[in-house]
Length: 110
Length: 109
Image (cartoon, rainbow over all chains, first blue to last red; front, side, top):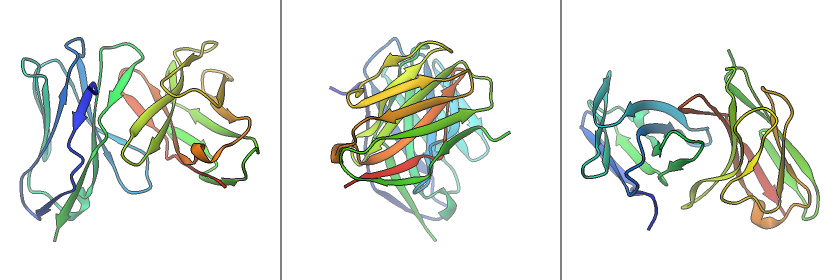
């Protein structure tokens, strides 16, 4: 079993839709959770970072962590064509080991 | 503030050739990493350096060597390139979250 599981998609939504991206993880020692956005032929770009359980909001993006079910989510409100990218979840226990999901491809249709 | 920079952006090698991928960061981070990214495999850690003067193997170190030249720079060397090393290589540095460079697209023929 992979330590972090992420549905690869692709996920296609119309412009303006609410997008929900999800990951599950297996190790309860993970404390820090991140979402990265990766445009085609570019490096991953840090979008959101949360510690432990709860929600964090930044503009149209909300990151949610539920440690009891080992489930992390990224919600995108009012999605735009410019949000079309691959989204990677990542986690770490605070050591040098980071675990990444394989990424979900999102396409927002104009 | 350039963040993490990588050179070259693209490279084509023949089997058996050697090359060094360069990485530099200007965020004063202690930790630096090298990953490769392949379709369907996600990001896989090759080597990391927790601090200047230390390096450790990651998940897929075979066929690679690294040098942490100073706090800013961390290089990845392929001594004898193989077609299986065709990939996109990313360097990253971190405080707690990781920041990635733009990548090097390597093809080994």
